[in-house]
Image (cartoon, rainbow, N blue to C red; front, side, top):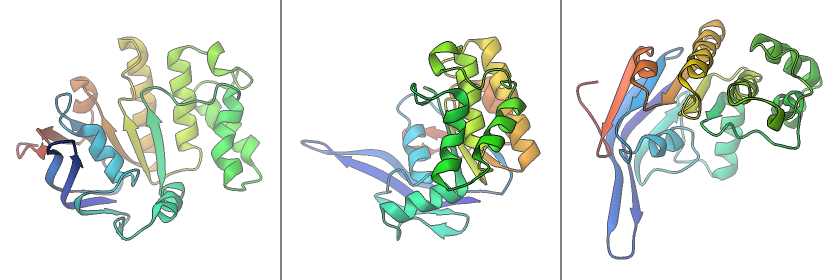
Length: 221
């Protein structure tokens, strides 16, 4: 589902070039659960952005569903993301002026899907928020907001879900509930799950762990 070959990312600073990622190669089968782990500054979130086509590599290649990203312009990468990808972020990224129901409906409405309201309500019920449809983000707890974000990510049934520190802003008990939900939905829908996390317990639940050390893949994964 995801493959990289000698992937690298560099940024130019005033006096020098900073190497963020170097020579990163791996493949992720369909339906796999994968944790990208490593110390702060090791390049985890940069790697996630490259895999999703949010940023372009300085060298090497990423394939999403066997489609290379390097030859695509920004619009084509966005179209591929809309077709294949769901996202969950540490900061939830909900629109404050929309209700939970409207937040989850949004990607369906943008895709012109007429049954957006019914589908959004169904997936919110699945994540345990069937009685919170008309609540705004400010009226929801952190855990509830993240469950809305997960519902929004899964509502279009993506083939791959990228999650960047999905439990990072949650207490331990709430984080476990959210993690359980992510893995349950992943299993139910056959989605490939790739998550960045500092949480070793969360990483241990994934079948595959990719450890970054100074921008390079640790060979012990």
